[in-house]
Length: 253
Image (tube, rainbow, N blue to C red; front, side, top):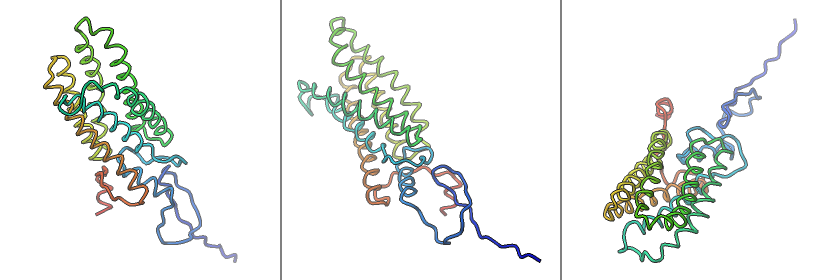
């Protein structure tokens, strides 16, 4: 009677694609490849609502957050009032808005599409376009309508549209990480005060919006630093409060 050979196999789950494949059993010891570990850190970064697909790219989220933080910081320092910096040097904002906040952040959004991160791609692409359009608006459109006395209302309307958009993103951010969720809460407050201050032509309200913007920029800088440091050191040194489903929490417990 022929003896049937028994072949031991197990199911290996690809953490990047959620596909299963049968492979010979080599070891009972759990092992994470470098790419799987990179994907785990990308998830811990808080900008991914799902685990990214395999890619040779690094994590573009660090660049996107850094570009957003630095550009917002420069703008917010001027918005916070003349006590912080001379308003006559505000022209320094334009090249930063166009090249770092605009082009670099927009590129980060395009790279987020490559790693299948819809949230990060939408956020960075949109706010990269925001900085490009806002920089162009401030320095090329405002001077043409300033004589009409309607430039403040035009600015308020421009920012109001982005305030509504940021509220929508804030809802999605709840499922990423606590850090990203809080960043967008503060950013919403920034937009709110800037909108009201512009429409009401109130320098005091604009100053408050500037201080909220400074707080937002520091929070975004922390997020960028967390991604770079955690990935470089290959462990979670700076916490971001990554979102976990009830099932993931029960497994961890």
